[in-house]
Length: 231
Image 1 (cartoon, rainbow, N blue to C red):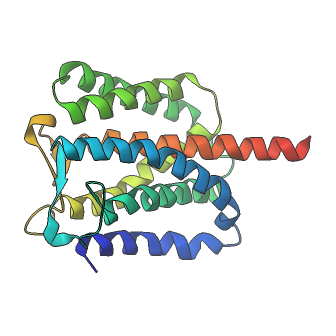
Image 2 (cartoon, rainbow, N blue to C red; image 1 turned 90 degrees about the vertical axis):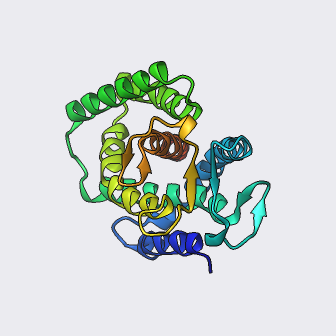
C-alpha cells in the first residue's frame, strides 16, 4: 500500500465504523450522500485533472500505487469520495448530538468574514490560478450562506471548524509535514505562499468549496425525501 493510500484508508476507517451508531444512524443517509458526493466529485475531478495537466499541482510518484485515471493517481480520486464522506459524517454527528444549538449569529459572522477573505484573495491574486478559482467559488458560496436563512447552515459552519483538525492532519501529511517530499506539491506561481505548517492557505477555501457543495446537495435531497413522505 502506498503512503497516500494509507492516509486515505486511515482517515476513512473511523467514520465508516461509526456510521452504524444508533443515535446518528449515518448509514441511513448513504443514498443521498452517495448522490451528493458523486455530483460534486465529477466537476472537482475535472478541475483536478486540468490543474495537474497545467502543473499547478502534482504528485510525487514514490508515495503512490502507480494506478492512474487520466493524470490523477487512484488515491487522489478516492480523496474526493472519502473526505466528503467524513465531513458529512461530522455534520450529521453535530446535528444529532447538538440538536437545537443556536449559533445563527455566529454563523452569519463566520460566513461574512470567510466570504470577504475569499473575495480579497480572488481580487488581489487573480494571476494565481489556484488562489483565484478556489477563493472565487468560496466567496460566492460564503455570501450565499450569509444571505440564506437555512437552519442547516449553522451546523455547516460548526462542521467546517471541527473538520479543521483532521484537515490539518491529513493535508499536512499530504503536503510534506512528515515525509521527505510532499505527496501533493503545488506550483509557487499559482499560490500566495502562505502556509499552515506545510498546507497552502488556499486549501482552506478549496476544502470549503468541496464540503459545502456536498452537504448542500445532501441537505437538498434529504429535504425532498422528507417532503415526499409527508405528501
